[in-house]
Length: 296
Image 1 (cartoon, one colour):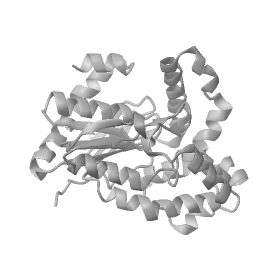
Image 2 (cartoon, helix red, strand yellow):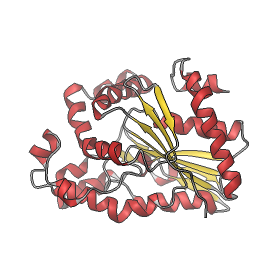
Image 3 (tube, rainbow, N blue to C red):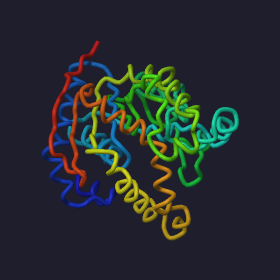
């Protein structure tokens, strides 16, 4: 059951030890939480780019269904990006950096909340949005996956998921060359921060269980994200090579995420329910439970 998953995800056999020691027990905990709450649950997974959060979300969905008999689905915050047209409009009206998908303010949060609530409560088929990163645009609604609801567990993963807004004074200093050169007046930073406070905090309040894969530092993200690019190229074949970012493009790209990734690494570990500390090789060096979930 797990080995076919490893092959499909192009994971080494060593990942099996993570499943047995860490993630199998996590799935069992989530199944137990579901029984205690006696209602569908929303699990949020935070992790820097390349930390393995998408793989973990898919694995948990598989284990919950095949081992614990719970209907589950794993979703990415990436599937709720604004359309390319909407982001280009923001780039014209607010700041050019908003054309690049990724940061808070470039997601359709109302659609995300609507979808998450329907998956946990509707007695019907729910259309689930998908985003085509190769086209940098949302898949047409007619091609969205339709999922029979309600589900027992909905898993949502995202690099910025759960990250709170910063204090206004923290926005004044640029953290990298991208901010210094392309956002000298902090217009982009303030827009992103305001979006978190306005739109994302209500989303976070709906999450029942928080999981974090904590990178040792932002320095690891470049290498991890480069590995993601190679996996994307392998999946899409030789024709995708022209769409894979080179080192310079990748370095600029990840600078969009540095501020909030570092802010999350500082602020989230004490707020989550399951925290997995990683080393530079993405091996888990420690697992702790800073808080216990409570179900109203």
